[in-house]
Amino acid sequence: MQDVANLRTVFYFDFDKSVVKAEGFADLEAHAKYLALNPGASIRLEGHADERGTREYNMALGERRAKAISRFLQVNNVNADQLEVISYGEEKPAVLGHDRGSWSQNRRVELKYVSR
Amino acid sequence: MVGKIRIWWAVLALWFIAAAPAQAELTIEITQGVDEPTPVAVVPFAWSGSQALPEDVAQIVHNDLARTGLFKLLSRDNMLGFPSRADQVYFRDWRVSNTDFLVIGRIAPQGNGQLRVEFELYDVLKEQRLLAEQVSAGSANLRDIGHYVADMIYQKLTGLRGAFSTRIVYVTAEKMADQQYRYRLQLADSDGARPRTILESREPIMSPAWSLDGKKLAYVSFETSRPAIYVQDLASGKRQKVQSFRGLNGAPAWSPDGQKLALVLSKDGNPEIYILDLVRRQLTRVTHHYGIDTEPSWTPDGQSLIFTSDRGGLPQIYRVHLASREISRLTFEGAYNARARMTQDGRFLAMVHQTGGSFHIAVQDLKTGRLDVLTETGLDESPTIAPNGSMILYATQEGVRGLLGGVSLDGSVKFRLPAAKGDVREPAWSPYLQ
Image 1 (cartoon, rainbow over the protein chains, first blue to last red):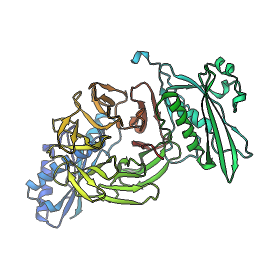
Image 2 (cartoon, rainbow over the protein chains, first blue to last red):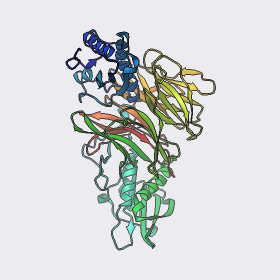
Image 3 (cartoon, each protein chain N blue to C red):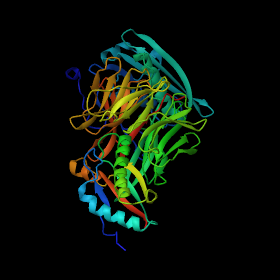
């Protein structure tokens, strides 16, 4: 059985974008393979935005990003029941700071296993 | 306009609010006032009791009036006397100190623990009494009396109803450890005094909104690890989870009649605006678009909602008329306009407006279409309008901490309310309270 422990679990996005970047494809495909082989496993996809713009609008942006990852996994044979999408908008930044570097680390989706 | 404005940067904190230190106490600093503020003197109120009073009522009045930026308050050091009754007022003394309006008062014990507060307002130049009133209060309510007196004087001098007796709620976030925060929903007087915690959580609290009778709050809490909308009664503290679908549950906004909440749900795939009838427990979907529709608020007549949508590609403000479901776009200037709030007279929209990569508070005159940017800081958001339309409170950033700022609708008056600690965001100004 494939081990998912070493796979990347944080996926970053460009400003105002919710397109899954190619750099994450291989790891996402590996997560998808594991989830498809283990129907009892499930994950939470937590979407985040940077602090720019309004809070509720950023909630929507965070959700859009988490849903983009969710669709990618479903296209790769993961059952929708194994996925939950939650947006935290700009409420839980990974990094504090008002600069491009901090913002790029905060525009992210965190993939978390609820059960394996 | 900008050239005419005289800016008095008060670098040192001008007025510290004299109350017991508490969580995230806010203190007000005026950073900019009007060009020619009206000179007013508030003389310390005489006290005929034996024990010291817990509050300096005249100082509260002084601070309230100063905060508007419309008045220049004479400091006590420069007063030639402390009259407390009409026969002690020598108008010449006050003309010498360039005072146009004079406030005097006196407080006397009434028995049964009650106090009688009498105050008078004089026009120094006309040597006329404009106002004389008396009120009773327990000593625990002296701050309320101070705000009440300030409301009366403000109304007499400006013709506009005062909003000092109102309250604000806001959210604070304090970092406890890496990736661990403590979020608090706080309620305070409009000047930041007497803060108390309504809700505390390790998970985010967002989007507090007042019911129009001032008795309830709606807000979003992630305490179950998923967002849900709650309604809390302020007097009893009782709360109820009113919406928790899969996906977004956000941006609650009370209808003017207090019967309904407009809110945002993404249960049908993407963020749409719904109206929840709290009495009939009935949910009605309002918008139908694949884009983001969010941040609803009611027009004061209750006939329409204004909301943010990126249906045109970028976020702009729209209005949906509820009876006809007709949608019209309200903002056209700039690439990002969001989270609008309308003044009670329906004339102005306050919103977040992006220009040159940074986010400011802007006001649009719906009659003329003119948009004015009111703030210079870069990450301004969550504008909330005082019920008398005089001021906008908003959240901004300074260094790595969030604080509240205030600006008058015409941009001429500015103040800030930094907290002693923690990050302050999402202010919501109460309606008039009774």
